[in-house]
Length: 320
Image (cartoon, rainbow, N blue to C red):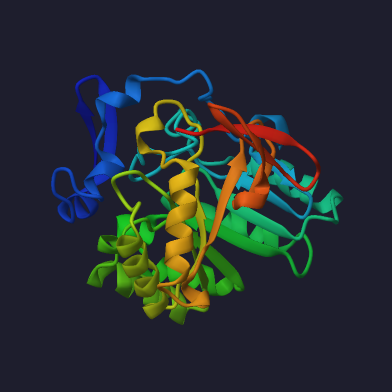
């Protein structure tokens, strides 16, 4: 069961399952429970911190990177993540992608032969009906052979019971597929979520994990070590750990880049290469994703680091 709840004047949503795993103040609790500091908006925080609207090529399709596109199939999630960079998009009332919007997106992909990958996101794609998901996947599969499809989802750890026989059959019918999971804390790896992940593995779905580095939640070597070793045990490859995006009201959850670099360097001495994710950041202003290290910081002043991508685009990210 999913509840839409209110703390003060702030809405929050969480499944009974995920809530049952947490206690007040824990790393899981802080991911869904509102904090008064969310009302503090920094000058550099944005409604669209990745500037996705700039790259919108049809009502539901974002083409930011040459070889891949992002299809926003729903604005629904089963849990409001407090750090979400699309918090101004979630539950906006657009709901499931329409058939005409799917057709428009597929027509664009057809005309752009450089597109090799399609990423389904939102919202959480696994909240849409199985019928609609099947339709989206089949239409993408018909565009041309070899297209890679990725699905971004938190369902296996937020509501693992939704990894049903019907869903598994749809995934098998549209293989090969990759799932981009977001698992931020080792306590999310429970017997139920592990069973769901194993079902996906058995169905031939490739599993990658993208964590977000979050202050007071997973910003320690010990927690990340347990998380990444635990993920490997269930055949999930740690892929990225992201520096927090500059979404409005999220400054209390962002770990300073200086501390993030320290954590990553320490982590390298604690886990194997296969367990080690890439530390990355999306450059504010639409600069896209870059690997985050000392070399990617081309300048700094008292308040900001200046980050540059391979195209020469420079954006600034706050030090604190």
